[in-house]
Image (tube, rainbow, N blue to C red):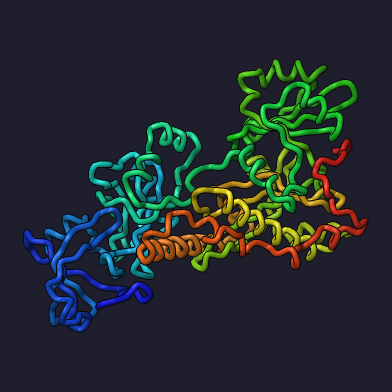
Length: 505
């Protein structure tokens, strides 16, 4: 079992047998070992737990190992599933061990485990668990988790205390809980006290994403004008130029808290959503609206964004949600592209506000001016560019993105929002895409497994997988194969300025 740096040994689907003993030792099949390996003290790790052990050999089958009870207890090693052993020059690893980091009671942990893990966990020797961030013991680096017991006929979910995993995918259910964890110092301690890697570490903020996208000139041309903490004067100017604008909470989600402002003669028409109902009010001035709905202590948490007059499907505006994931080959894949058609009287295309989802191509085929295939190619090119570009600007690796974008009626493409933790409602709303939910989750977990193996093989390579090691974004779209807007715009214009006049918006 002696190895070198370039040829790590991976042994999958191994069953473990526990023997009572107060000494930490591990017995491997004699066929795996060379004479020089026997009785050599080593380090073995499982997640954030590690222990010295003595290596022994046995004459049993290659499909099982024998472990002392002392070593099992030191590692908090669950034996309900087959294990994978991964040997490097420095230590022997059990895993990969991947956790979905969340907040919730036992019912929530089990629900998350069933929707994310069940179809995957029984396929290979990777251990998956859902773990509650509030239950971390920083002195022992352990956490309350839920795993599958594959020995039972129904693969029951069982709670137990486990080591912190090698890899954590952030599935914290809300910005509020994420903010609470940040305020408590959870993330600082995670980085300082453990080697666990956290993927998609936090929710994006609209203004932060705007600034990052504006760095890239080929993305900048697709960004609607956006202003943080807009003043009364800013709103007057944008209404004069575009005729309409959106006010969005910087930390908003699912369309909550959005106001749609339209200039109607000398008055201002404002629409917003309460529950599933759209309310429309008329104000004599912008100042009166601000005093009524967004006084200074509230408007400072908002961004103003240029309204775009979108393409229509059956006389209703529509845009798109692109769902991208990183797969085990480190490649961004667009796993789904859905058109979202605004509901009746709705100010946004959100499904929660009465919007309807349908295949993107079906929506584009309703218009007769532009080539649907060219429009789809442009979307595919730009969303991949967004993914690789954002990765290059973040300290932590990204793994999943939801991108909202759409075309105006002149064929110009606009990027509205990028989400780090996209939901799956759009998949569920389109029968043809519903089956892709499983493929999305398999791709994500495959990438996490790849990262774990690479972290063990190259432990000094750092924790940021965001960009190539030489700093260049080699997998982003190249200039020579760039899809251009004038490929699909019959007028020949390419929308070089995202802040063009749009008074009829």
